[in-house]
Length: 95
Length: 152
Image (tube, rainbow over all chains, first blue to last red; front, top):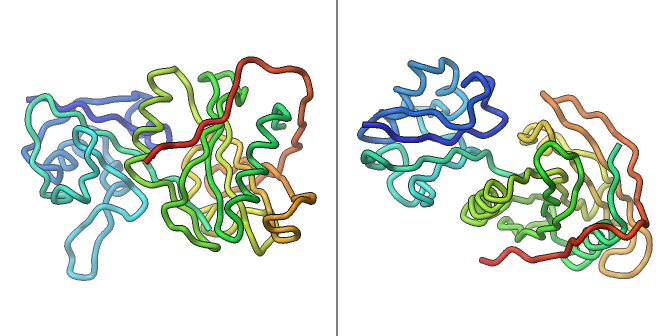
């Protein structure tokens, strides 16, 4: 089971310059753990520790599964299937 | 140095004036690796705020997919400051995630929605370090570029 994950320029230092990498997982959380195993350091750029010890997606990192922002599909619990397309994009934002 | 065609410069300034007192934001895409800004895309400020801007997440994905399909990248990422100088704020620096882009700041604090000069400055923001660069507005008739507005 392979899911293609599109990596933004700013995070390609973790993927040896690759624009997209394959990973596996039944949920987004599992996929990110799998990414971390092959590209150490990536998880910390995607997730933030919350006060209760749980992790959540960083506020200014957007993750899309098949073009849907995961914030609207269950966040880290979003279910994944073979062949899904995952895109990571940092927010374009500022003050 | 940022070299920018006058039509693109004016499109960015007009967008900043139009959205004042809220911050305006957008990009100018260009061919990957060219460092030539050619296609203006005015984005909606999803924050709708005089002190913050953020591209809507769905429009952001659509924008990047379009650029990938055209082998483009964001050459310029711009936004306006409506009450302060055209210099990156701490938030701007912390959230700057395109190390290859020219970050353009336009300040509309002096004339708001009215005619009149604006501050228009450009920076590189890499790993939290801000470096200002010269802006050269060129008058040569450019290639075929046009302004388009992101659709919701």
